[in-house]
Each structure stands twice: as structure tokens, then as C-alpha cells.
Amino acid sequence: MKRVTVLGAGGWGTALTVHLRRVGHQVRLWARDPDLAVDLATRRANPVYLPDVTLPAGVDVTHVLAQAVADADLIVLAIPSHGCRAVVRAAARHMASGVVLVSAAKGLEADTMLRMSDVVAQEVDRRHPVVVLSGPSFAMEVAHQLPTAVLAASSDPRATALVQAEFRGPYFRLYGSDDVIGVEIGGAMKNVIAIAAGVVEGLGLGHNALAALITRGLAEVTRLACAAGGRRETLAGLSGLGDLVVTCTGTLSRNRHVGIELARGRSLADILAGMKMIAEGVRTTGAALALGARYGVELPIATQMAEVLAGHTDVRTALDALMLRRQRSETESV
Image 1: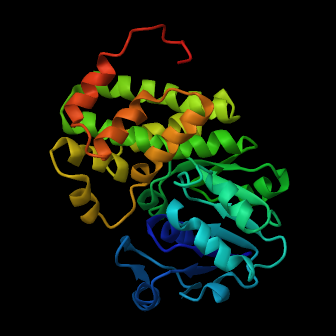
Image 2: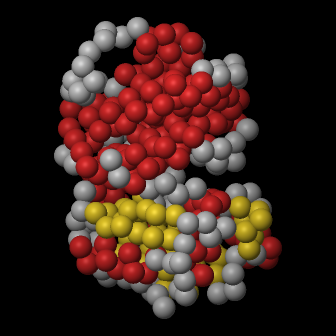
């Protein structure tokens, strides 16, 4: 049994807390909001994000960050990308030496274009191994013990093996990888493509269009990941194709929901105001385009979604722009 701390009491943090307790660990869950922490502790459920999932006995809840990370053997960072740096910075001085950090967020930092593992490594001065947890994994399904397969990726093979061993359960399987770049860019970019998939769904454009969007989206994600130093085969796996398919087609996908509602004519501000959880693709789109510019990689789907999200164009005009682009070989790199 390990002492595991989960930072972030959203849907994914709550689901991982429940899972880690079920597989036998002593788990402490940190919520930024003191009122939510009290609610979690008294109701033994997350009334905002996973109301029908019970927190098992043996899960402690706190809003005190220093108390949350003290003496933890593993610390899981289930924090939205835009809040990751501040939380890790505040927690770093309270962490035990060498404790393994598990980054469970999917996104890019808006101002720096950094992947989440790089943000974490900067804030802990690279004194802790960082393992990225990614792949097709809706929080609700993990919480309900539905079969799930994900990746644990790190440059430290011992840290990867530790996370594989300690997170594994009868319904939760982990594969290992050392391609942290490919895994994280796949996990971040699939949210952008999923917004476009939602637009296709919302406009009622059919299965042909959705299949084309997902396939060309995968090509776009792969180009960027490889330019940044990732491996092509990683994007054909769970953290690339797997995560892309589930996020573009699943009814639980928040980013797909944003696209559907945009296609119905709602404003982005109105859509986001009505959502309890974060749609990471909205913030990631701009950072992805900046990263693409850095590496000289064309990202046509992300470009059109950025125009739609910014209110510069409507969804049908964006679709026309994609369909009327110059025709080329499917394997052409740009």
C-alpha cells in the first residue's frame, strides 16, 4: 500500500482517487475550494463532477495543500493545464524528496507552449521523476470500473514501472512509454480536433465527414508531435489515435460538446458559462498554433477552430475553408 495524494477534485481527480483506493492505496484528495472539500468529506461524493460515485472509506479530503502532499509516496496532478504551474509551485516545498509525480492533465501552457511535464519539472527544479498518464479515459467510465487502457510515459523507466504497478487494477491497464513528447502532444491536440468533430456532429454532416475529420486530425497531430521530437508510432497508439477517437465520438467529451453547441449557433462564452468542467481544447488551440509556427508545421484544422473560437468566422465558413484547400498527396508532410 502506498500513500497517494491526488491534487485536483474535478471529475478526473475524483475518478483516480476512487480507483487508487479500490486497488488498495491510502489516498488523500486535495480540493482547491474549501467548501467543495467539506462537501466531499461529508457527503462522500463529488456533488459537482461525479455525484453518483461514492468516495470509499480510507479517502481523506483536505483543502490544505501542505497537508495534502506531506509524506506522500506518489502525487497525482489532476489539475487543469492553466492552473498546474501555480499549484505545483506552492506544493513543491512540502513534497518529500524524490517523490514520483504523475501528470494527469492534457494541455499546453498558453503563454509558454510548454507541455505539462515540462511545467512540472520547472517548478520542482527537476528533483522529482515525472510520469505522464494519458490515453482514452473518460472519468465517469473509470469511476464505474469499465475497462480502460492508458499510457504511463516517462524518461525514467523505474518511475514508469512504479506507476504501472501501483495504478493497475482489474479494469485499468497501463502500457509504458518513453516518448513523453508524443504522448503529451497527442493528449493535448486531440482536444482541439474534438471541437471540430463536435462541429461536424452539430451540423449533421454525417459519418463520412467525421471519419475524414478524425483521420486528417490524426495526421495534423502526428506532424506536430514528430516535429517536436515525438515518434510517429506513438500517435498510432493509445495516447494518439485511441484518445482522439474517444474524444471525437464519445458523448462524455467536453470538447466535442463545445463544437456541437458552436454548430448550433451558441456563443463560446455562453457555452463555457454553462459547463461545470474545463474544455481544455479551447485554451490549447492558440498554444498549438504557436507551437506549430515554431516548428514550421501547418495545422489547418486547428487554424480554423481558432478562427471559430475567436469569433472571426462561423463554423460553415471554417468547414468550407478546409474542404477547398489545395488537393495534395495524402502522405504529403504539409
